[in-house]
Image 1 (cartoon, rainbow, N blue to C red):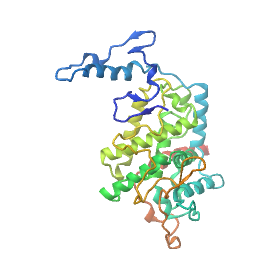
Image 2 (tube, rainbow, N blue to C red; image 1 turned 180 degrees about the vertical axis):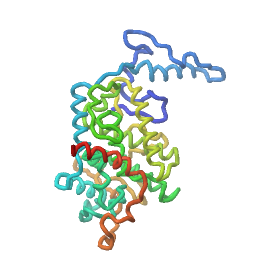
Image 3 (cartoon, rainbow, N blue to C red; image 1 turned 180 degrees about the horizontal axis):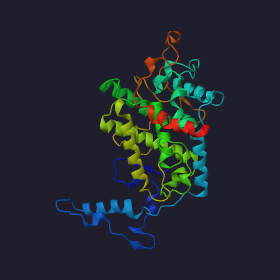
Image 4 (cartoon, rainbow, N blue to C red; image 1 turned 45 degrees about the vertical axis):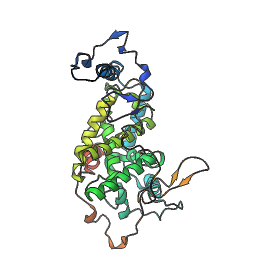
Length: 358
């Protein structure tokens, strides 16, 4: 997949896909004049105007301006995403999802995970807000569980990089320098669902997506492309968090800014170009998507990295620390931080419950 770079001007991408441009021409050979062509070049270095023109032509001339409703296939994918998003947590159906998340997060170098605990403070170590992780899943439904599993199973390098960044921020700026990982994943699935208009903000499902005009429907040509878009969003969120030097209470603001920036980039994509988990990779971190970590890293890469017989054992994403669970009351107040991090998903789903009951 083609990768977007967060520091490039909107529409400037690297990788495949840009070959569709035709020297600043678009459509039926009509030539468009860009704003850069009239720019003042006084004091610029030789060739700067030419380079600037090229950037703008890549961002505007190559990108089609026509909006369209989703294709039949894309509409089917959106309908499936809507069903998954509005499927609430069911103990019988989704218990296995939680067991798998527990295993992938806490599995150690030997390949073993501690015994599964349905209610535990250990869930907070991966960014859930309470001992019962299902309490945070409301607004993201089954889709948010699928996304968390997709991150852990398919994009562990991204996860381990984000968690290492969490550790770095904590060391540099204290315990409130981070956002809750799991709640961010849940919030991203909900916000992307709103972008594609399969749900309305603070309300339930809607059929608006069937006629909504957008340029970036190729991002939902399959559930996997949607998951890759969600990964790209997570990467952008983490980068913006560092740029803003945000703290725990900035979660909703940074999430909103991330979605705005994402939609702006998506609206400029050439035909057939879709984001991936590598999109918005910080250029200063050459090992951003690498599994190479130092021995002193408490948050290492996934337990299993690679494919085939040569699987490499890695440290767990999070070190499991046993706690005296019997001394804690289920859903105790000490675990309810009262922040807005989980409200991104929970508050917006209250009306949805009422709609479904009717």
